[in-house]
Length: 304
Image 1 (cartoon, rainbow, N blue to C red):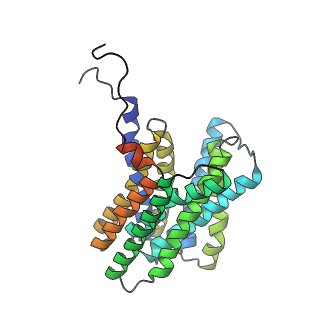
Image 2 (spheres, rainbow, N blue to C red):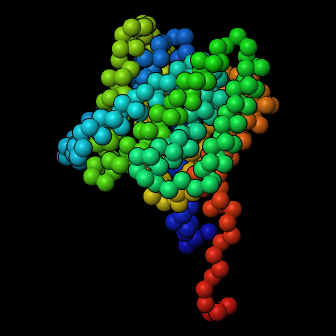
Image 3 (tube, rainbow, N blue to C red):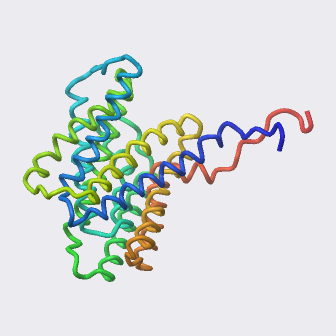
């Protein structure tokens, strides 16, 4: 309608959904590269694109990175690089949906690590959410293993859970850095140390690039970089609760893309586990409670 303006809180929602879709698309491209390139090559491809993006960014804005605390800055990159490698390894071992779902448990581990290292309060929601997320993840692994018995689920599932732990550690380091370090410099740590982490694995198991695999590799990097930028921008227009819910759309998109493009089996038990796991993450981080709480009553007289 003419003159109609969407509320500000809704302006970032389409971008938030699109960012979640792009993160799922990145996982799909990584899965398509399974067996064609090594995990180390896929990891390096992602971070090379990120570094190229930062080179263009810094040349446009005319600024240099600001290193407030080099040690913590390096840890953020090392944790992030380890998480990405384990995440892509899990994608290679499992189907796209279950792998993304296991990595999506990172908010729970981030909250636990934040309690120990940032002295952030741990609520009863966190403990209950941790139990639910663990049970849900177990159902996902069990249900998927029933459909794909030939795959080594122990190694793949373990890598997926460890990727969530390292993701949580990386986020804790990032939150500590953001007091005196800009976002681009933090992202630089992620890309630089992620590339260094993946490079030895890429060299040890280097496989020839073809036009097809090179295109998919560029797709992994571009989908990741654009998704990260869109998600960051969208968070300026939505609440923390909505942002947390939006990030949990990625497993759903991943499951749908994997089933549609790769004909990956979708086990009913795994879907039940996915729902339990996502609900545990949302409950443990307090997002679900805030969404279910009644809205505040308007102040003032009725009709005023």
